[in-house]
Length: 400
Image 1 (cartoon, helix red, strand yellow):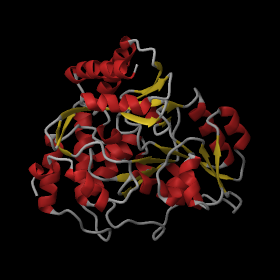
Image 2: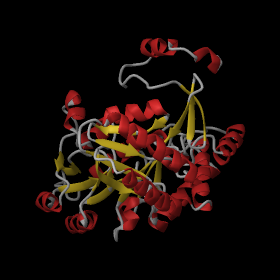
Image 3: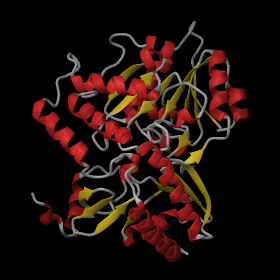
């Protein structure tokens, strides 16, 4: 069926009839993309400053990714985990290098961020010590995924309640050093932390939080497990956000931008944490297959070759300056780092603002009624930033 057959609103009825109702009604039927732009079935072009929620690191239809996927699928796409493949080994070694996990680092590949978090939950459960480490700590208003283990960690009560009881032993604490100090003891198996809470509206942690978390988890024998599914892969101006702090985690969950849109996730362990998993403890049919890992190598290789990590920091500063220059009374706060930016709003009109932007041809996101999330592809340039300034300025005026 060609895209020409979807140029009317008939697709909305088909979507409602065929798809489970777990998502809001889709905004448009997108049929192609190129660079920082996507087009819908009616031919309207949109400037994509969400990038599939921080997934499309190289934008859309990047030739490096297209070539890698085309070549790999022509060779072998899947073989099962009874066998190893060259792209799988290459990506595992690359992740050990760019995370700093080094020779003791180990990698488990999954299909998504939520699956990486499921592996992390199992890792935490294996850190029992003498059997008394039964508590797991996570943060209020955090988000780690919607599978049962990941949802248990997620600090959003409204998301958890329909599916309770969830995993026992998980406690959600406030994102303060004081709360952390009170909660931590020798019965804690692991602490799960997002360096920046993306789904909460791109909320920064207090200064010194990660450093204190590392001190306390080390003191009490707990694992420090970081969820960098949204902050990783160069988006915040380093390969991973934790690298801006003087810490080394015990485990790191990554996904989203690793393969630029091809589904993949990974859990990387550091040091002694690499000894916890044994044969038969976990697995995945598709995780780490040659198609997904070839895509990951292509994307991470291009980010490195093109200097997109340093660019993310520079472009992020430009983007902040653009937002500040719009001088809108609606924007009260600019949060985040690099090309993961959250805007705090004076009034709960984020959905209206995102809708106004969309109607003008700009894609941003409202993770809640008081925040706008901006996460353009890492390849964003001056022309796209100038267009963002124009379109977002108009959206602000429309809502104002």
